[in-house]
Structure formats: C-alpha cells, structure tokens
Image (cartoon, rainbow, N blue to C red):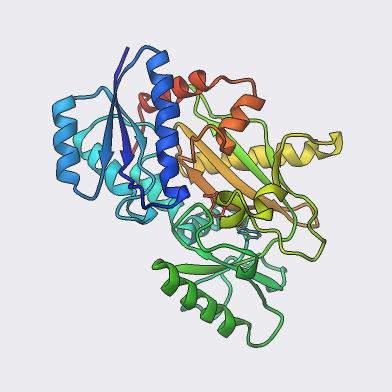
Length: 339
Ligand SMILES: Nc1ncnc2c1ncn2[C@@H]1O[C@H](COP(=O)(O)OP(=O)(O)OP(=O)(O)O)[C@@H](O)[C@H]1O
Ligand SMILES: [Mg+2]
C-alpha cells in the first residue's frame, strides 16, 4: 500500500468543459487507487507553488499521481508542478518535466522528430520565410492548418483553420491567421501542412522492459464529403450539441488489409516513447496520407485519463482493466529513470 497525493490543477465553475475535465480524471484515478488499497489525498495545485510545496511536505506522500494539465490557464506552465516534484525528489507518475516541456511545445517536438528521422508534417513559425522539416523531394504543402503551438484540446481549431497554400500570398495569409489566432487565444500559434487522410491514436502503457502499445483507435469522419476538411476541432471534442461531435467517431474495427499500417503506426509510437523518454502512459496522434504514409501530428505525454477519452477506450479494447493500468502507471513511476 502506498500513500498517494493526487495532484491536479485547480479549476473553477467558470472554466470551460475541457478545463473542468481534470475533475473527471481525478475521480476515475482516485476510485481506482482506493480499490487498489492505496491511501489517497487530493491536492489542488495553482501557481502558488509555495503552498503546494508546503502541502506535500506535510502529507509526505510515497508518490504523486500527477494530473496537472495546465497552470495559470496555460499548458505551457504544466511543467512547473513536475519541476517542483523533481526538486523535492518525490516520485511522480507520467513523464518528466523535460519530456513534458518537449512534447507540449509542438514545434520543438517536431524538430526533435525530424532530427530522429521520424515523419511529421512540414511546419512554419510566424517569423519563418520557408517551410521547416520539408522532406527532400516533397512539394511545399497545398494546404496548411493554423494550430496552437503549446495548448491541447484543439484550442481554436476548426475547419476554418485550414488555409489554401496554392497562391503566392500563402505565407502572408498564414502569418495573418497565426497573428489573429494568437491574439484571440492569448497563446502562440503556428502553421502545419494539412494531411487529408485517416486519423489514428496509438496509446501506450509503461511496462518493466518496454511500453505496451494498446489496440489502435481510428477516428472516422462520418458523412464528410471527400473535399471537406477533416478536423477533430474544439466543437467535435467538447460541444455535444454540435454535428461534428456526433460525426467524429472513435472505432477499433479494421480490415485485414490494414494490419501492416497498424504495425507501422505501433512501431512509430514506440519510437516516439523512447525518443522522448516517456513514462507511465502516452498517446501519439497520427494522420495517414493518400499514399499510405503515416505522419506524427503530436505526442501526448500524460494524455487525458477521463473514462470516455481515447486512453481508457484503448485499454478496454486491449483487455486491460482500469485498475491494472493505474497500478502499471504507479509501477512505472517507481522504476529508476535518468531525468
Ligand atoms: N497537420 C494536420 N493535418 C490534418 N489534421 C490535423 C493536423 N494537425 C491537427 N489536425 C487535426 O486537429 C486535431 C487536433 O490536433 P492536435 O492533436 O495536434 O491538437 P491538440 O489540441 O493537442 O489535441 P489533443 O486534444 O489530442 O491533445 C487532430 O486530431 C486532427 O484532427
Ligand atoms: Mg491530438
């Protein structure tokens, strides 16, 4: 039996559905920890890190289950909680501060992917005059998506985030869109080649030797015409009253012909896990283009643990119980790590 502090970012009734979701994750993890026989106390974390530090010193947990997704209203600061835990030498679940920093900042993560020769769509930062990460021999993107550089939950993403790049004014219109979105949402945006094709989520669970790749999920865009942009945007994720919410469906059913692709996605997800030194649990999001080439869209260290989110669904489809997974995440946190 362990004494576990369940650390999460404090939310208030005024917050959005995506921000309030952390409370559902807390309940799911807390009930599991209690069923597993651990002693648990919830600790809400804010930017007042001195208060969190004091609570941790008083409670003296054996381990922290880390559910801090954001601080001060931005994902960019989530790493402050883990930096505190690292400085106090308290073991915690999920990935290290370094891995969280690298994966949360999508352009940084993409740079690392390119250095490791892992496929990720070309991208452009606001001050750039040319595409980054363009594979030799590959044409410049025909369409690009303007998306948040360091926030999750599809902040500011919709079909209208897709920009046509065929005109000579492409860079200036992308720059305008990046500036407008950054000003509107108060956080940096960047542009990325839009990949029109199938979308997959590969979840991973830490293990003694290597992570287990869970059964792949595909997000199907039902009833979308061929030329309609396929974006799992904020409405599709969070607004139950929107058509997109009902037309973007997670599935686990494949034809035998999909097996080589699924194996390739699994191998890429595993490479991401080791390249970024992830721990505990993770989810890698992919798009596959018309030529069957997979592209890593993003690496989610510490992905959402809500009962209805992709990680829990992949566990269920893989025959792993929720409690087994929570214990596996604790066990992975207690293994020696380098950072
Ligand atoms: N380059 C791209 N090409 C096509 N679609 C994309 C691309 N980038 C993002 N998308 C669409 O936008 C969605 C959200 O993008 P992404 O996963 O990068 O953002 P996020 O906000 O971090 O999401 P999450 O909630 O998974 O953390 C994807 O699931 C996909 O549907
Ligand atoms: Mg994603």
